[in-house]
Image 1 (cartoon, rainbow, N blue to C red):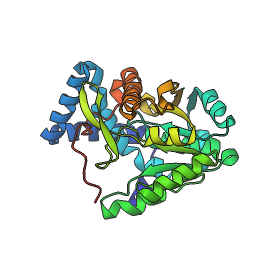
Image 2 (cartoon, rainbow, N blue to C red):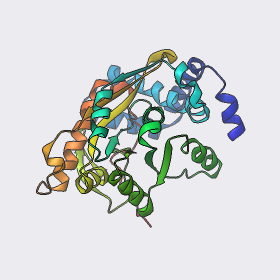
Image 3 (cartoon, rainbow, N blue to C red):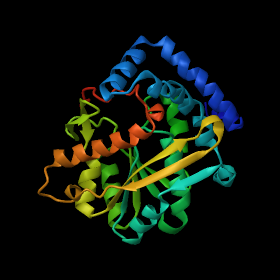
Length: 285
C-alpha cells in the first residue's frame, strides 16, 4: 500500500483533484446511508443544496489528495501555491510563551494545514504535536503512521499518555493541534448544540487551555479549486469564558461549537457533512 501511495503521489495535484471529484460523486450515488446523513446534516444546519453541493466533490478530493499529502517531500512546499491569513495571530500567541492550541475542524484540507504549520514553526519553536487515533484498517496503519511522523510534526495517541504529552508540550511553550469536531469516547465530552442538533463534543481543548493558559486559535486550510493552492486561515478565540473556571464547561464548549459554525458558514462546500457528528459516543474500553 505504501508503494501505491508513493506512485499516486507523483501525479500532479490537479490530476488528483479531478480524480477526487469522480470519487466523491461515486460515493454519493453508491451509499444511501451517506446521502441520508449528508442531507440530514446540511438541512439541520440550514443550508440549501447549492451551498453544500460542492462538498460532495470535496469529500472525494480529500481522499484523492492524501497520497500526495502523506508522501510529499517537505522540499516541495516552496513549489506549492500557499497563502496565509492571520499568521500574525500565530506569531503573537507563540511570543507569549504559554503554549498554543490549534483547533482545526473537518473543514478544507486539515491534513495539509497541520503539515504546513509544522514546517513553518518547527525550526524555531519545535515540533507540532497532533492528537490522532490510529487507523482501524491494518493496511492503512503503516501509511498513516509514517505520514503523521514528519519533520517537525509528532503524533500523540488519543489516550491518557497522549493527553499528557500535549499538556507537557503546552507547559513548555510549544504548540499542539486538535480536531475539535471529532466525536470523543464516552466520558471525554459533553452534549452541545451544533448546527441545530445535539452533538457529543470533546472538552479536551477547553480543559487544556484552562490548565495551561495557552492561547487558542481556530484555523482551517482552504482548498482552492483545480489544484491552484491553499489558504491557511487563523483567528483567535478570545472568549473570556474560555479561561474562567467559574464558567461552566458546557458553556465554553458551546462557544467553541459556535466558532466552528461561523467558520463553516464561510465555506459550507468544504465541510465534511458526511461525518456522523451527532452519533452516540463509543465506550473507551
